[in-house]
Length: 241
Image 1 (cartoon, rainbow, N blue to C red):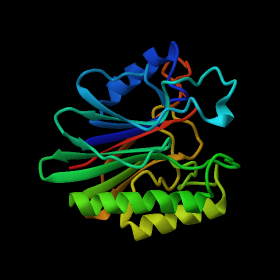
Image 2 (image 1 turned 45 degrees about the vertical axis):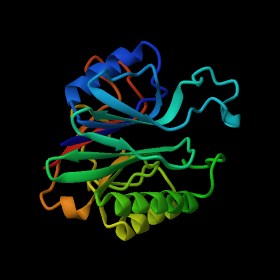
Image 3 (image 1 turned 180 degrees about the vertical axis):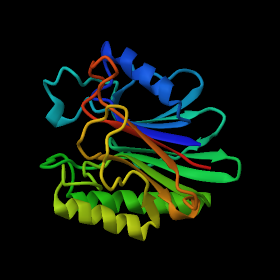
């Protein structure tokens, strides 16, 4: 199984052709796309699970890049492994579903955590605690393992790049109490395939119970091979099982 996450910087316009080409090349079974749009469509082989639209956020008034099809989070899951959408309280910054592949049952929880000086949510710690209560309930009810992925807005490996120390501490506490492993916590953030030198702030965390064999991790640049911008974030994927 292959899981990928990528902040696609509004997910609109001509850059969607470049994004879709990159998405096809990565060839993941599960995508957690953040800061996206319904125009970025992965096609009929995938089920789509979405957060609420962003169009009525006060802070987006006057932003031409945001409309009624703009989303903070969209999950795309291959039809062959999709089981069910998990209904959560109305939320613009998270979406969840249950998948099954072989003997693996997995709750996939995609989210966007507060960025530095984010004025639209509760504190970083309160937001993490709110999400954590949800996904732990889903795991219990589904008798499944857990994948939490998306835009954490904090780099967790390599030299400091983005995010407050308190935010990083809150994430590490959440990871430990949820019995997760952040597979994208690169020690040196060595770039691959032309990826930037900056630390990732988009991450994938898996239940320790399914991380017995270290997953294969890949990373790609916000720009394609011709230097054309696809996003302002690098993307990352893991393969396991």
